[in-house]
Length: 362
Image 1 (cartoon, rainbow, N blue to C red):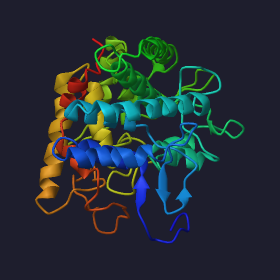
Image 2 (image 1 turned 60 degrees about the vertical axis):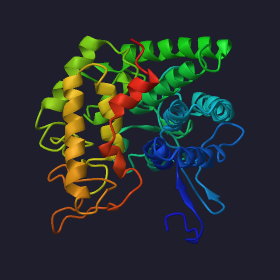
Image 3 (image 1 turned 45 degrees about the vertical axis):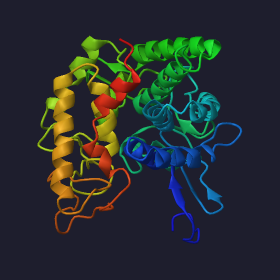
C-alpha cells in the first residue's frame, strides 16, 4: 500500500528475513540457508542490499546489516564451506557500500542512516517512527543524517568483526582481508571513544561534527559494545540507564525509548517505547560482554514476555513496555502483527550465539 504495488508475489524485508534465518538455522538448516540466498540474490554489483522488495519494486534504502551475523551463524551451525565461499564476497560488497554511502561526511570511521529524506533514513534504520530521526539534522546533499549513530556504527563494527573471523586462517584464510578488517575494527573503536561518549549523560550517543550529542536515551547506546572492546568503565556507567525505572528499566524490558522522554508511548505506536524482539536480542548480546547479570535481566524479561503471549498463540512483532502484552489498552492506537517472523527472537539466547561465533575479542 505504501509503495502502491499490487499485492501479489513475495514481500521480502531485509533485516526481518535475516533474523528469520537465525531463528530456523539450527533445526531447519536448508531453510536457513535458503532465506540467506534469497537476500544475497538481491544484492547489486555495488553491494546495495534493499530494505524491501516486492514484485518488480525495490526500495532505494537499505536496512540494518544483520546478514553478516546470519551468514556466520548458518555456517558455524552447518559447516557448509561452499555456502560461505559464495556469501563472503557478497558480504564484502555490502560493507564497501556502507563505506561509500553511509559514513558521516566528517569522520571516516563513524556511520549513520541515509536516504533521499530524513523519513527514508529513519526507515532504513528499521526504527521507523522513532523520535530520534526527528531530532537529528539531515544532510540533503550527502543523503544521510549529519549525526553519527551508535546503532549504525555498532552494526558496521560487528560486520567488520564477523568478516575478520570468517577470513581468518582457521576458516577462509584470506590474509589480506583479515588484516584490513582487523585494522578497520580498531579504527572504528577509537572513533567511537573519541566522539560518541557523553560525560554528561554517561552514554554513547549520536553526535554531530561539532561534538554535540543528541540527549536521547535508547537501547542503541549499547550497540558499540558488540565486540567487547569499548572502554569497560564507561560502558558499565551507561548501565545505570537500564536500572533506572524512569529510563530503560521497569517491569518489562526494554522500551525503545526512555520512559521519561516526552515522546514516550510504551503502550502505543511502534518505535516510541514499545518492546521489539530484535532490540532485546541485540542489546542483550552487547551488554553481556560487560555484565552477565544485566544481560540476564533482559534475557529473563524477554523469555517471560514470550511465554506469556505465546500461551495465547501470539509471537508478536512488538509488545507494550507498560503491560508486556501484544495488544495495547482499549483506546490506545498501536500497530503490530500477532504472529510475526522475528517474534521468536525473544525465546533465543543471543549470548550463546555470540559466544559460539567468538565475536568478543577478549
